[in-house]
Length: 154
Image 1 (cartoon, helix red, strand yellow):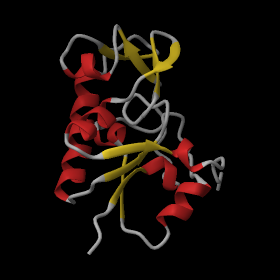
Image 2 (image 1 turned 90 degrees about the vertical axis):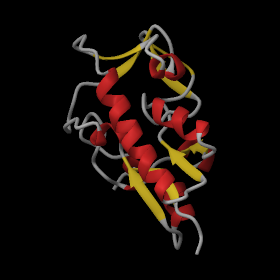
Image 3 (image 1 turned 180 degrees about the vertical axis):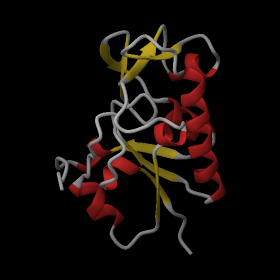
């Protein structure tokens, strides 16, 4: 049996984003058709509600957040690092227990970004904490942007 693909839940139509929306993506949905996948949202697994305040990195990216040298802060100034790390580790456990070797993740997310995230008020090169943990465990990650077409807003 083929290994499942880990995918950001918002990319398959789950309304779990900070603003209560989803980002269903036509290219991702086409790719997943007929395949097994595991939809996860590290922020929901952190116990965060929907909607919720947006968050970004402060003082460094994912690697520094994992080691405690940077933080993840919401737009109200609350430090959300510990809870997001808890959610990212829960998502990682699901990925590893399924033996997934591939992930498709939401770009620009503090948990799932692959090449771009928000840090200190700007969009910069970098990845999210879940992406960082997946890669450390040998799971290849790419973003929905590698599938070309825009989202399938359903």
